[in-house]
Length: 349
Image (cartoon, rainbow, N blue to C red; front, side, top):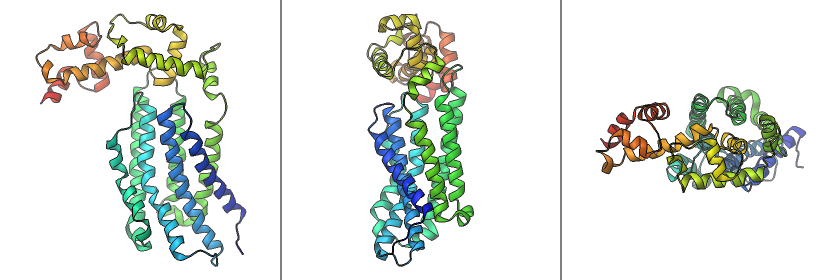
């Protein structure tokens, strides 16, 4: 007779909720790219955890009616998903820390081992995982985890003073939770936690994350705590963000060296307080840093253009929206790490 203890049932519900939660996040419009990457991360992790549950159930009931071929296939599929966890984690951190993050096909190279193993799942043997692939998957996750830590630390260093820190706290907590799971699933500690220990811990973490991320009016509540009396709703934020993107990308308002928060707010037909809220919460930058980041992007493009090789750096500075060469040099070096002249030399060499 099929047997299932309460601990296994709890872990199974956690894995199922992870899959369900990933579907919900995928279809949410807010923070599109970040939500979708996180939904994929939840999905592959939940599938990986489900593998442990399958193995544990087999240990509880050795007479379970399941062919060895089917059981091995399920295990192989679960283990294969470990190779997708690391790359998705890094992509998620990039999407949360880079205001204009966009997915590029070059990122797909990081998923090459995952795709290859997924296709060959029916042909993989246990010795293949035991002697090589399992250790490689742990090393892969650890490697990408350290990259995520590095991205997070750089994000903290570049974060403008007074900008919202909600995402920073969330990313920090995410790293802590992930670090604990890495320890539990490490070869050194896994023999103590067993197949079900990590699955239960994952379920507990997932329940906590679900409660936080799906709570109602979180975004509006944050605004009200940072900007008392604010009437900016999520709908208004989305609309204003679209208008701002249009103003920056199409009209290139940042080319105006006299552009100010009040002037841009007037052009958009909103209050300076509302515009400041949207820039701070969406891009994690002050108004000045937000505008200068677009100016620096244009300057880098102009400095890399062979046809503008003979133009003076000062000319590039003014063409990019800066009103002085000294200000341009200061902002550029702070953002890029090198002076405009050195950047041009390296770009054109």
